[in-house]
Image (cartoon, rainbow, N blue to C red; front, top):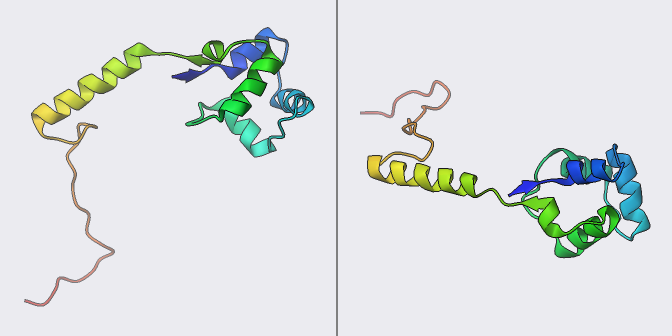
Length: 109
């Protein structure tokens, strides 16, 4: 999924997160400046349905316009996991190498 908040806001003439935050507050959703900044610049891992409803009311859009489905990302992730399972390695492709602690001595023999 891709969070499409900035584009939908720009289509409505909202160019700053502070302006969006003010409009959300007028519709009954108080968001901290930090959370608004995160919503404005990154894709959130979760959004409350009540909050999503207010975003849609402010931007006059549907949830499908704010949350864009990206099937190619799902396929890529699935293919990577299959390759990792077949190669018996971590999904990132790099083997796990243990690191020793801060110059600790070896245990007694």
